[in-house]
Image 1 (cartoon, rainbow, N blue to C red):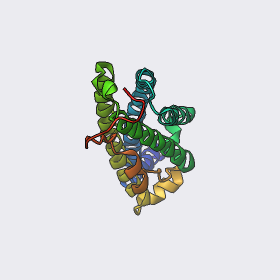
Image 2 (cartoon, rainbow, N blue to C red):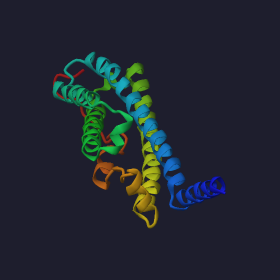
Image 3 (cartoon, rainbow, N blue to C red):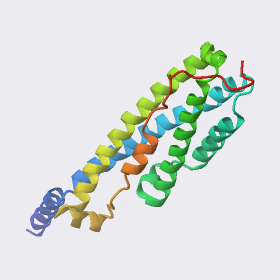
Length: 205
């Protein structure tokens, strides 16, 4: 009799956990981790492109050194942050990560604008190919980041809603940080290129 009572209580407990969102937390937490891994994968893809872009641009005489330096420094800062899966559970570290990626986006955007002023560089097939690859990568970052945003939103709604918020407190499912509107505007836009009558600076080919 005691055995059956124990089994009944265990079964009731499992149903209670399911009703309070425990299983949903498991599912959404894993989905969020997978989405974040894809974000990191695309950011790494972009970071790997930077050395080739810098090397190609360096071959252009009189190219703005300050612009190159900003790209190199921004990449160094972005790659210095250890982007582990646990980052999405640390709001402070997450904020530093997205700020660093935002600086790299801005530096690359500036480089592409400046590159338009150099006819020889624009005609360089290797640079053109790298620019196309970079633009494609920025688009992939946007897609991956949007998927992450949606995953975190669903997870956070569950963590804040009753009665699943009780389950969250009991099992330590804290609200996860997400990309903010301000940072989204900063880091989501692909590099912009100004095609309006560029003029070569003095000393440029």
